[in-house]
Image (cartoon, rainbow, N blue to C red; front, side, top):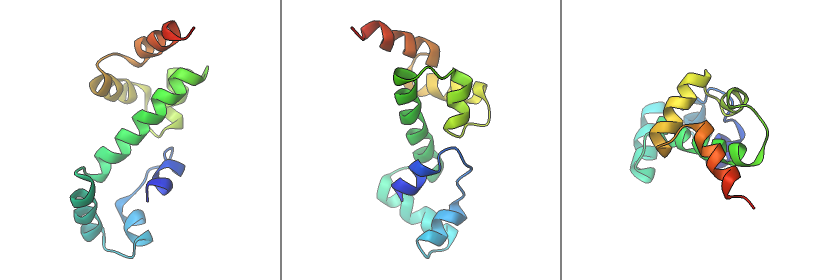
Length: 103
């Protein structure tokens, strides 16, 4: 399941799609997913998207808007808010810190 999510980050990943891959109903899948991970599907996907964002920010020349689009955020401002909420600094500042730390 994690592999599917990682391969489809740029898309809108629906509970129904994942549930059908597991041969479950949407509600059953949601309950089982939360019980096994401690997170809702939305929280889990956002976490994986932000992990990918950190990788792209540190290792690519893509703009923040391009990264937001590549990892499935609908717009740059939504991505920036979520990134700062999760990391305590803006994506731009996080990237600058990573570049400064690299010899």
